[in-house]
Image 1 (cartoon, helix red, strand yellow):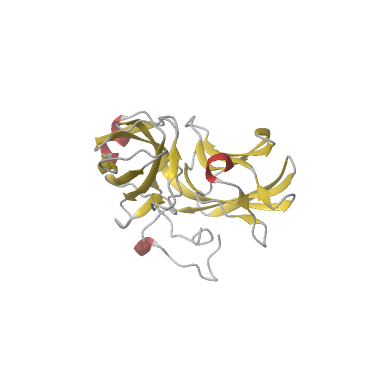
Image 2: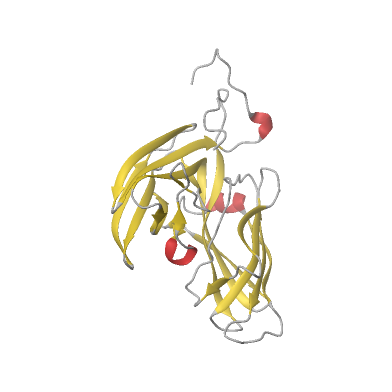
Length: 278
C-alpha cells in the first residue's frame, strides 16, 4: 500500500499476477486429524525473495480435521509479479494428535513450479487452476488463479461503531473468477480485536485484481454460531488510488478501504513532484 499515491511515467505497463486461492492436504498417510506446522513460501519475478503464505512453528500448529480443511494462509504481504515462472517451496510437518506417534513427522516437502508464460498463452482467460504435490506422506493441492494486467489491492477494515471484537468472515472475489479468497474466518483463525484506531488487523489482506474486473469484498458478521448478516461492496480497480465505503453489518458499523497500486520493480518508478498532476 505504500505506493498507492505514487506517480508513474506515461506508458508504464501493468504486470500479470497470481492469487493463491487455497492450499489443502487432500490425502495423508497418517489419516486425520493432523496438527500441521511448517512453511510455504513463493518466489516471483520481482526479486526472487521469500514471500510467505503459510508459516507456523510446532508450538502453534493448525488442526486439520479432514481433506476439505484448507490451511490458514497469512500472506502474501505483497502482490506477486509474474513475468516468467513462479516457484512455491513446501515444507510441512505433522505433530501427534490424541496420543498418536509418527515415525516421520515430515508431511509434505518439495518445489512446485508454475509455468506462467505457457499457461497465460494457452489457458482460458480466467479459471482456478490446481498444482498438485505428491511427496513424503501426503498429497497437497495448491489452487490459484492468474490475473492479467493486475493491480495490487490492500484491504483495510475499520470498526466505527460496535463491539471491538469481530466475529465473522471476510471474503474477496473478482467478477471474472467465481471463487472465494478467504481473508479471515474467525471460526478457524480466531476472533479479531480492533486496535485503538478501530482498524482490524487481518493477517491476509492483499488481493490482485485485473484492471478490467470488479472486486467484490464481502463481510459476514456472526450472530451466535451462525453468519447471519452479509454485506458486499463492489470496488472498481484503478492504477493508483484508493476507494472506501461505509457499511452496517449486524452490530457493526465499518469502513471498508481498498488501496491500489501497480506492481513494479523499483528502477521503473518515477517519484512524484509538485509539477506533476495525478
